[in-house]
Length: 423
Picture (cartoon, rainbow, N blue to C red):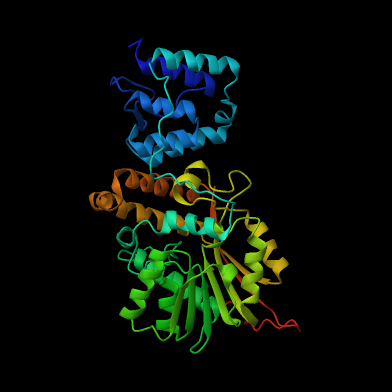
């Protein structure tokens, strides 16, 4: 249909890209264009295009999808995979709008009746204020993601409530996320060399998975800190359930507020992404200060190259505001500057692919319950997040590593074994 919205949009986009669309496109009049065997992007109304006009690129697409103005028919992950392949080819990087392209885009927009005031962003988008990484703003950023709903996270995750990459040690039938998370928690405890009576600090303790595991199975006394009110409430209930209230203390506290005596071991599992580059030296100095000489640190953290170190527009607006991911080498440099000796780096990138896909499967199989808990738009945020996240780890655009470091004694003693006893 030569006068349909799709017939006017597709040639313009393909000229910008210098090639064919990697996905199909169906507009609000029902007309489809593009490759027949590809997932189809569906523009349900003119407002979807208006969102892209005011916020071209990732943010506009995310707003359109979350609001339901845009949808995808077919395999969402395959659609992402095709778009990223186009990006890697260099074609998408050349798709820049100069004055001539903007003029043509405006003519098309007017012709399609798209021009109008900017649509209001979805309510799920974070709106933080104040100076970056102050205590108050960090609390707001954490609350945006982690205080969403304990009931939702209990639905999404396994019984341990471990919200970080699992450690998959088997491909056998029946080996599931719950066992892989148990193996991850056990791996951390072994790397830390935990023994009965030792004192453990968990910085950014989440819903208490490591605290409970280390106290129950390794006999430690533990302290956990979190900025999330919902997490604090959940952990206290778990401690009472497992009769661990006399062995585990949990606080709503920032790492900058720690004044305890040094601990035998410290863990920080996928919390450092929230610290920010400017504050990261203080964070690593605090981890060092909280350890006794010969005490071990296990830091599990996601990494990313120099492009979009915060994770990109979608993640920063909808998932983890103010987050920072850096190359692994830079994190190691921060730790060494703080005084740590790096003893082991364990890449878990492929493990996160399986972990996130397990969460995605749970989300889809419980879709109606998820919508009842966090709404249709909230559920769409999480679908986009999990599908895109799994692909980012699969394609090595993001990584995750367990770093084992030690605070050696003044004489250089590490007290670590000569071999990797945790292997």
